[in-house]
Image: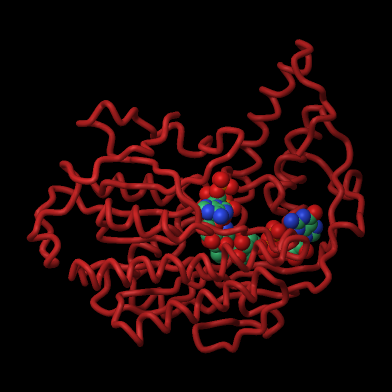
Length: 374
Ligand code: NDP
Ligand code: GDR
């Protein structure tokens, strides 16, 4: 996939003077997404393209392709009439790149989804996590604010990807009024990003919203988050490519929903008359052990025969119990989840069974080592 790093400074998708004043003269609404290559970025892009948006994604340079989750919706930018998703190199640690792309793209909506999003990893690389998750959000807010000041495009709307991890050790149910007590460098950084967003709303009148999203999963979930780690293992164990699954704390409880449902809530927040903050959750909580039970038994396996506890997957400080109260999002936005817990687990297992079957073909043909596991 090629990245349009040489995008025009003016062209069919840049703003007309009318749009600069807040009335869009363009035929499509324009969204800018950071973290477009991630789980949520891919679902949000599909959702916005379905609503006839033009979608610009900022991607970071990587030595390997990192666009697997959006390859299926990519159309070569040379095909100007059809390509409505465009990619540009930038990084949340590089303020100049953020400002440049905001000025060039002139988006109507900005979704800040980029993050070093792994809680356990944030204990290993706390400095970097704070730089991207906390200061990165500040850099993007500042790029939007200075763009608005320079152009008068005050209709621009900003979404910040907040997290239930911010509640940390505060007991459930957690709502917008529940105090934060973060338990990791990641969660503390998300708290900072949350308050930067509130501050830019109050200080500059920016239309800026925090979505406080509880865990959401899918077949596109990163393979080192616990749900996907489990469903990948279920597929591989069932097909005979793996026998053991090493995990940490099985008693942690999470409010797990489906990512496809949650990106809709992000969009809904930016369609309201006034900017505000919303909790998005299923309002049901399950332990990791319960997830194991549903996933393994679905394919006729007993998880106790395969799971081994490994201390290395325990965290220096754990978040024991998350369960959201999303009544505000349900009442004000009219949002509610469509996919329930069991349906989600089975959807992930089904997809990972298919992936394991494809892997088995490669292993049997000698193209892949069965030990190569996530
Ligand atoms: P992922 O980890 O799947 O995706 C993170 C994205 O951020 C990737 O596109 C990644 O790029 C990009 N990224 C990482 N570092 C940088 C950087 N320095 N500059 C630019 N881009 C960067 O996360 P999710 O899709 O699951 O989550 C989306 C957002 O929502 C994140 O901010 C996460 O913290 C937050 N969140 C997620 C929840 C969940 O349950 N999924 C719940 C609550 C909040 P690359 O592909 O190159 O790695
Ligand atoms: P979380 O998700 O930390 O909630 O953050 P993760 O799936 O990593 O952990 C959930 C719970 O499972 C326990 N656990 C393990 N976790 C992992 N990753 N690997 C293991 O082997 C394992 N064994 C047990 C963890 O201790 C934890 O209690 C996710 C991310 O998407 C964040 O970006 C987001 O903000 C929050 O969800 C809401």
